[in-house]
Length: 252
Image (cartoon, rainbow, N blue to C red):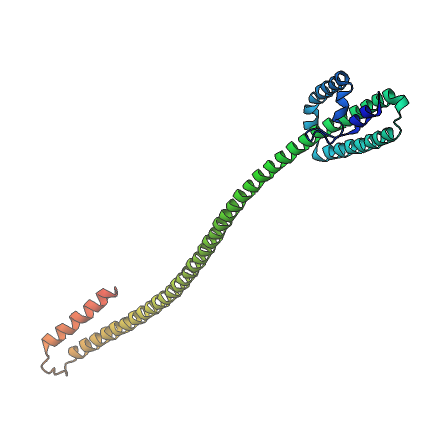
């Protein structure tokens, strides 16, 4: 193999759609393509495992894969610098192995990045849902605070009303006690007045009885010369005394 073939293998400017290492596939295509198929199959089976890992773990794994790619690129550069015409076949096989390692890391990085991206989308969706729930919660909280404020105002009004009602009841009770005491005092005074009046009437009746006896004694005196008496006035006076005695249950 001449130097032109080596230069063709190292030249990456002829096809912009290929990566920097793609021209190697033109040297040993069957091996490179088999390696790609094997890599894709293995990593496709690990997608479910990647989806179970956290975003931090995926980020750490991605960083580790990029570090491996950098090491492989350094080895690739070193292999290029050590490439000689007399061992070109060995160098190409070495390029193939290094390229396969880089391709492994590249595919792994794509899978890890995809899983990390899906994680970010999932977290973003969860955050949006949480923001929506938080907004609804804030609305519910404001409504609850409004209801709570109204309830506090209602309880305050009820408390004020109860206080006024109790104050009115106390005033009414005090007024009732005061009125009862006044009526009781009046009743006691009236009873005392009635007793005094009864005693006075009894004295009057007794005096009247004595006067009648004296009058009878005077009439029986032979020297008594009576003057004309107004009988009607006397009868009226007796009737009045009788009615008063009847009223207070006094016999005379």
